[in-house]
Amino acid sequence: MTIEDRQHMDELVSRRHLIEKVAEDLGLKREGKHFFCPSCHDAQPEMVIKDGRFQCFRCGVVGDVVGLVKLARHCDLENALEWLSREIK
Ligand SMILES: [Zn+2]
Figure: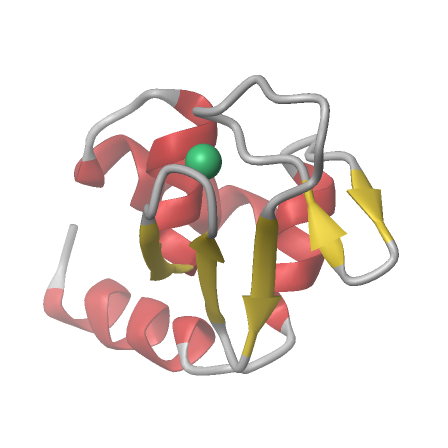
């Protein structure tokens, strides 16, 4: 990944509402404002997405849009960035 790619990604990641679109693209189910946490496999939607970040109130996982991709796809940072760069233009 080049520096230009990385800067482009930083700009995309800073968009506050991107994470909600990405959560849906990742197939996370939601109920109102709450999402089902990919690592909890729980019957209750305990994950909240707000201001470009996510937080699960059950397992405590927090992060930004890149972290959400890593969590939902069980991949590393590099793969998460690759997936994001394909998913969002
Ligand atoms: Zn969780």
